Image 1 (cartoon, rainbow, N blue to C red):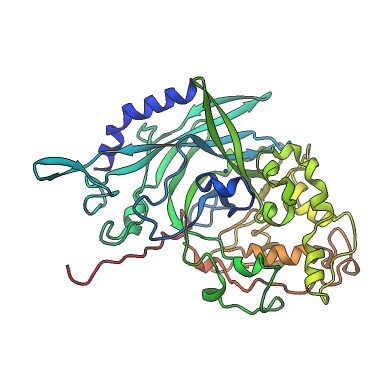
Image 2 (cartoon, helix red, strand yellow):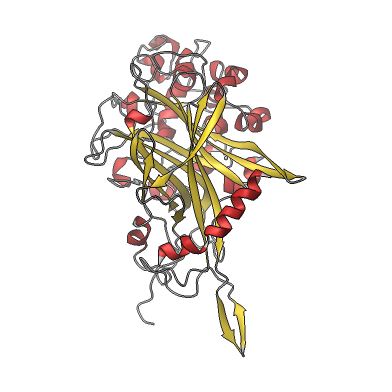
Length: 475
């Protein structure tokens, strides 16, 4: 039974916690060598599942570029660190609350009798793993969730529990294949947990392997924007989405909207971070190593020399990176590579400052802004656009419920970012005039298509992971 796996590791978990007391796809040099802590995506949106409109969903994806056939070990999380979802409710660029996830290994050391000796097996499982019966699962992971509440710079940490009072949660095994885990989608669905948030209500959490939801033409993007059809609606997703065959590990959290906003201000800022522990003389310190809010910022906006520094920084201190936003290099590069596409001429780029640092007036700008900070911002008063009717271009496509008002799985953030970088907001009369953006109305695209219909209609929204192995027709 699944609960037996949790109960069998309670002593190990407590020991690990006591010892601990004595985070885009390879976007920076340092994090490229730490895939377990590499944040690849962050989503923030009003839940569009039927009956859940009063909730906000946050998805933090880690361990990018997972090959479905990545056995025998597949893809664990970092056990000597933690993963955070940070929420800024007062415009300071500092977290008001942090939801923290810590992961711990489980090893049953399953053995098989061989020639009169019991010998440890070499695989994750010794037989099929079924819903409610994981007796053949050799290794796995459990995790805790805590809520950090900040007051005058001091954090108070509270362990969160499910509705039965359990403070340990189990992560489903990665998708080994259909013989090992028949009907994986149904199996994984049993690992959605209802979590009690003190003083706020009940939310939901799912942590597990998923199909990577990001859609991007990686190969051509980083080959000097070598798009075959950079202009117009030219799509061939199967050929151009370099993540079409990849999985990722998703931390999906849904909380009541009232938990993440304050009276008089419906806008919340959020970002995800991960941190790695280093123990010296029995004392463990943690260093933030990954940070992600808006997509593609560290990849395409921050200069190479500052990428690691950005990953270790706090949004409240983003003034040090402001020049990368006010005077961006990507539009100049696009113009150099495609001379017919003219970069915007109005500086500083107040439009990009609004998108990334302050919020867009009337959409995502908070009521009170203390520090310009690179955060994903969501206005929880903007009506939800129903599944099947969402515009993949979000705000610039006339759908104010989409990116950069938060980010839904079906928002085509690559096309949006390309068009905004070249001045789409100027061309719409926001923060400038059409004359400030000669190519502001050009429909740039990486050629890889996505929309809301590529994802699930309900929590956890991102699809089950891919597999390289399927149940054989004959045993």
